[in-house]
Length: 337
Image 1 (cartoon, rainbow, N blue to C red):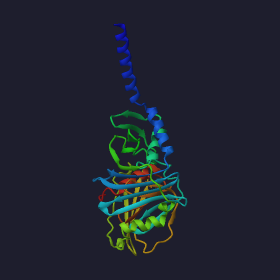
Image 2 (tube, one colour):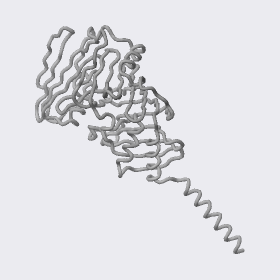
Image 3 (cartoon, one colour):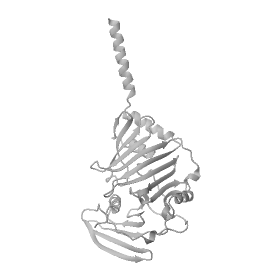
Image 4 (cartoon, helix red, strand yellow):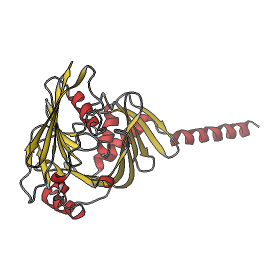
C-alpha cells in the first residue's frame, strides 16, 4: 500500500513539474526575445497599420526590410488615397521618399533607435527590455506585454500592448493607446521572414525611388489640385485662431494660420509640386518624426511634412515638441475651424 502511495505521489509530482516547465516567466520570455533579436541577421515583414486619427480610421500597408545592423527600408502605402512614402537608412543617412512627387529628404538622424517604432521587431523588443515595470501574460498561443512607449510624444501615446507568437517569438500585433486606453495605432503582422537575405543595393535611395515610381507614377498635376485648408482638431488649451491670411503663389496659394493665447504657433499650408526630374535629396535639419499618417521632420521649434498634395509647416517658440506633434497629428483630421 505504501509503495502504491509513493508511486502515486511521484506521478503527481511529475505531472506538476511538467506543467510548470510548460509555463515561462516574464524574465524567461524577455531573455528569449533579447537573444532572438541579437541573433537576427535580417528580416522582412508585412503588416497592416490602422490609425484612429480624425473621424475615419486610415489603413496603411507596411513592408519592412531590415539588414543588420543599420540598413532599413520601410514602405508605407495608403491605397485608398494613392499615397506612399518610404523611409530608408543606409550608410549615407536616413531618407524619406515621396515617390509620387519625386521628392526625397535626407536626415542625419539616429532613427529608428531614438523612438518606438510599432512596425519594427527589434524596436518592440527594446520597448519590452527597457520597461522594467512592463506587465506580462501568457495565453494558449501568445505572450502579451503591456509596456511604456518611447515616442517623442509619449504623453499622447504612453502605452502599448505587444503580442508575440509563442512558437517563434515573432510579433503578432501592437496596440498603441492614449492615456485613456483608447487604441490610436494598431499594427497587425501578416508575414515575417527571419532568414531574409539582402544586397546593399536593396537599400539604395535612387533604386528604391525608381522602383516605387513604377507602382505609383510621378503625379504631373499636383499643383492643379485646389488647396483645402485644414485646421487642428487637437489644439492647446487657451490658444485660438486669431488670423488667417491667403497669399497667391505661382502654383496656387499659401495659407498662414496664426494661433495666439497661452501659447502661440503658426501653421503654413501650401500646394506641393512634383519635381520633373530626379534631383539631389534636400537635406533637412532635425529628426524624423512619425505623425502616423505621414513622416515629417522635427526641430526644436518646427515640424514640416507633406500629406495628400499639401506641404505643411508648424512653427512655434513656445510649444514643446510633444505639443507640436499633438497638433500636427490632428491637422489632417478636420476641415472645420
